[in-house]
Amino acid sequence: MPGVTHDEAPLLADLMPWSVAPLRPGRGWPMGPDAASLKARWAALVRARGADREALFRPTRSRTLHTAVAQLPGHQGGTARLAREGGPCPEPVRVLHGPFDEQWLIPDHRLIDVARPELWRVAGAGQLFVVEQGYVPGAAGPAVLASAVLPDGHSPAGRPGRIRPLFRRPGGLEPNVAPGLLPYLSRALDQEVTARALLAWVLAMASGSAAGCRVPLTADAGVWARGVELGERLLWLQVRGDGERPKLPGGRRPYVRAPLPARPGSLAYDAEERVLRVGEEGVISPVPREAWEFEVSGVRVIERWFGARAAGGDAGPGTLEAIRPATWPQAWTSELLELITVLALVAEVTPRQRELATGVDRRITVDELGGAGVLPVPDGARRPASVLDHREEGPDGQFALI
Image (cartoon, rainbow, N blue to C red; front, side):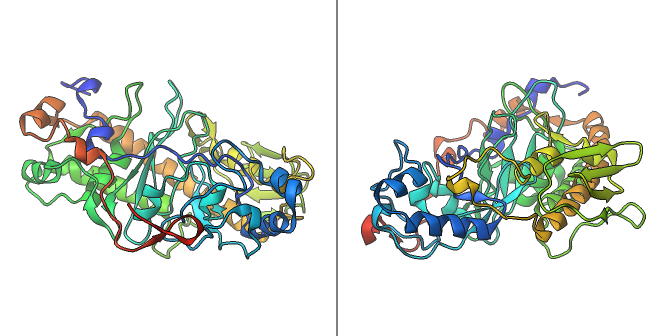
């Protein structure tokens, strides 16, 4: 970075000051890659009685069958003690469980040790989340990823980062940006800079460090435009939320060449043939090497994704986690093909990111932001906004006051 040391680039923690720690589920069975299995697990739980229900539930210090908690904001989960619950399963919702892995979660506050209600309050239409990935020195992969569904902040490296909503209030209101930063950048670049443009720049330019994720800023309008364009491409690939699914050009598009077995337990890649072997019989090709080798925090994404779905997992017999699809669902095959596609397309952007990073001059330093009054960030910007515009049900049907 010519003329400016890495430490002079501002921290993401200062640019997007409100952050939330990852969720702490406390038990694995309320989350999984298959919604039908979650409903079956719930049904098994409420059929059980007494000590059997307690053993299936797996109580912790934070959650037992008798814990009184409020509803998760925006969801209609029960608030009666689980010891006497007998109703239907709350409808599972999509969540991001680590990088590029959308799974399902039963949105019931009684099942989750630390659910981070402040995140649930601002989730929904218009919201985007930035998730810092666990920093592993020398490891490849992006420093931050984006999600339109609520992320749990799980890190494959076991070193979770922070979750930063783009907006502090529901409906895409009140950007989670250091006060004064957007007007300052707008003046420096002689154009309007929005919160979404800043998010795109972060996705394109952020890099990990032991001190936290850093984001170099530029006063060059041309460089800014190229960075935002790259970031918008990454955002579209990561969120996949506008109805159009990512596709590789013809001839490079992965297909199932041999049907996947009913319960695949292994995954292997042939780099020379560009073939992904799923179990003993399944074959997917062509699979680009860049997709197979794509890592986040030093962990290969495809291997981790498959490990969460493969037969022969570590769920003990008689546990709720052991309730899972009897055979590999067709939906998982479609998701695997899309994951390969997305990782290949993201990998294509990476060389352009590196080129842009080495060519950024006219940098805006931490000292300049301090001189403009943008830094240090006021304490209030690091706390959640008061967003309660409706009544939330508290324990045993009482209304929660916030």
